[in-house]
Length: 123
Image (tube, rainbow, N blue to C red; front, side, top):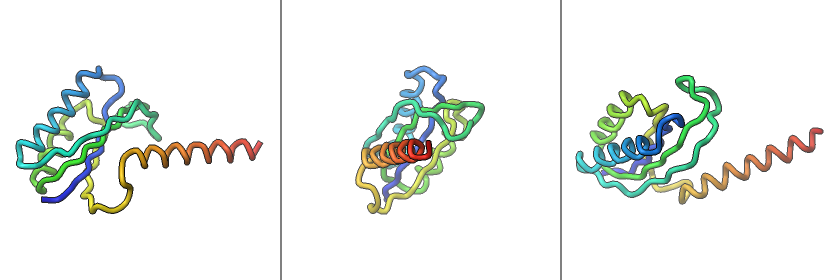
């Protein structure tokens, strides 16, 4: 079994309860196919860099789990037909890189501050 991280972008136009149902269904798939669910992190509504399925905002959901390639195929099959899912990506985690999702959020916030500083210098 290998460690994986899955990122799901849910449509911001659906109710909160439907997002939780979608998340619970993915966790159910992971556990049902012999995988282990290690946790998730839900980010708030974010503006997308470009429209996806005519949506300009999305709700990001990160899941950490371990399992076999069969679990990955089952998750992708489910998300591919789920209309509430705008995009998804599953990556095999090698244990290196960022230590937590909070580090990713901090990095994004720092980049935003740097961009604002550069804009103020241009004026």
